[in-house]
Amino acid sequence: MVKIPAESIKVGDVIMPPARELQLWMRRHVADAGLSEAALHLTVEAVREGAPDKRGPWLVFVCGHSEEWNRGRNALSFKFKARPTSEWPIVARNGVVL
Image (tube, rainbow, N blue to C red; front, side):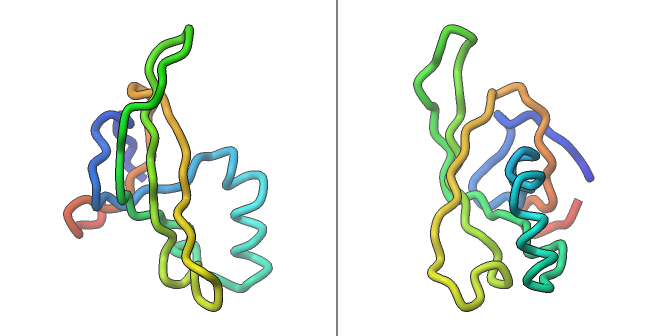
């Protein structure tokens, strides 16, 4: 999987969730529900600058879950923050799988 700096992520990109969330509960949910790995993919709906802290700036991402993930559930936005220079796994850009 290709990784890019978080500051390069744009609205419409398809990315993976934060590694911590994947490890804590998302992969378990996929296995328990019999979903494909693609159910984990998030589509970026908005990116904004978050309030900086003593270590520097943040980016706040608002994403939508895949249709497979949302099947039978209310579609809720998935929000998280990342440092602009952190490397982030991207699945697709402009509809092209990377």
